[in-house]
Amino acid sequence: MSKTKKVKYNYNRHTATFIILAILSLAMIFPFVWMILSSFKTAVDVYQYPPRWIPSTWNWKNYSTVFEMIPFLRYYINSIVTTIAETALQIIVSVLAAYSLVHLKWPGQGFMTALMRSTMFVPMVVTMIPMYLLCASLGLIDTYSGIILPQITTAFTTFLLMSYFASIPQDMIDAAKLDGCGPSGVMMRVVVPNTKGAIATATLFSFLGNWKSYTWPLIITTKTEYRTLPIGLKYLTMESSSEYQVMMAAAVMTILPVLIVFIFFEKQLVRSITLTGMKS
Image (spheres, one colour):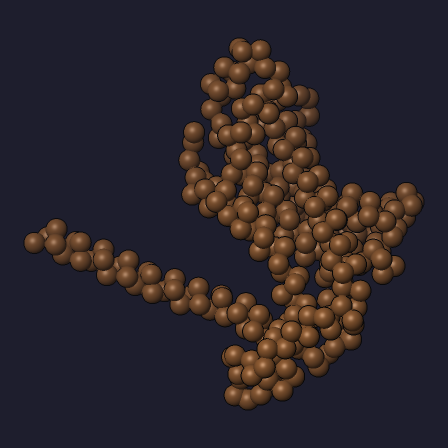
């Protein structure tokens, strides 16, 4: 009798959990679905009350209007180029730094770790002006390098990878050294292959952060040909302040690369979250 009650209790608990998660999922999906449907609406449908879910007429012209109002394609290319470059360089630098701080021994290692940790508590507004002056002295204003280089180092990504690198058993590393692997060989043949999920997660976080970056690209660029999408969307808002259907079309096109990257890294991300805290 007790076992039957226990099974029934667990079933009810899981059912309640499922219902709560389903409601929360619908709440999170609602703005996304509304954005997509609104991107095909006419101005009449957008302002109709009570709100209309399905457009009365599917207006595809909203997407072409975006390209007519602002140089959207140029902004798109700039964001893709800078985001891919920043993400790739961030991951390379973070992998090297994390491996060095976890599995190598060198003078000042503890001080460097503490120094990197302290940078996480410094807001961007504090370093913004010195960084701008440095880039100006190097002639990096209105260049891709000026957008990319100041953002390739991030303590968050490094410490995220450090937590996973530290979980690799020392026996595996010692075995690789006995087989003749040097520091670079240990990193490329043992550490990186066993932390692909963590690196994929760090790549996803890095890509999202760089794709939506607004403040630094706005400061370091003054010419339209170097502006990125977040800045372009701001210009579009100014140009079409009352045409919400056009802004929704631009938002849909802006979020597409994020969805593609998430789908590509979904398995690695889920696996990384599942295995968090587990030792090999």
